[in-house]
Image (cartoon, rainbow, N blue to C red; front, side):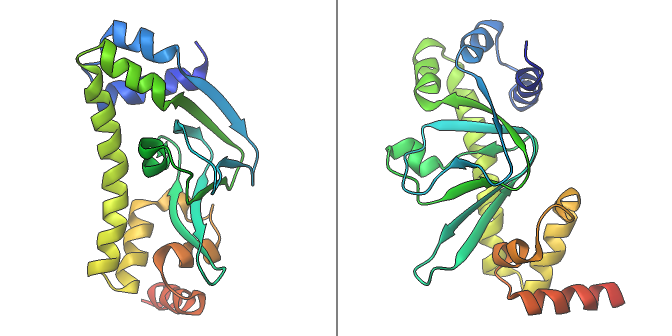
Length: 196
């Protein structure tokens, strides 16, 4: 079995230890491995997304362009995280977001129709879909709540605490956009924290 698919199998088994051998045998027939270059897109705005992706190596940035033409980062997807635009996947509409590689990235993909067929074939298969969706939703909800309840400095500290391995892999411009902090303000926050 390809190493990236074996990595995905281990992560899926950790998420859902109840995956049966028959479920996995079916599921793996829909898996493919995509190797993307830095700056290459996994999902492009304006195009329909029909794949669920799982990053085994590399880093993806999800972003959109607002009405002022500004590039707004909404997510960083690192190793062992899922990459997809769920609204586009579920309602079959073009994505409003770009998912672009910041580094050479390997993604294990599965078409959504293959997952749906699994729901029909296996009673326990829906558990996989629910747990994967919950994993993605938890990350999205955490970001939304940070904007609602935390100040800029706390958002920065929380990001560093949760993502220490990303700190030297993303630019300050992308990080300030993700945190909703002007870049000069982010620089001031960093200097203040280093000076503490």
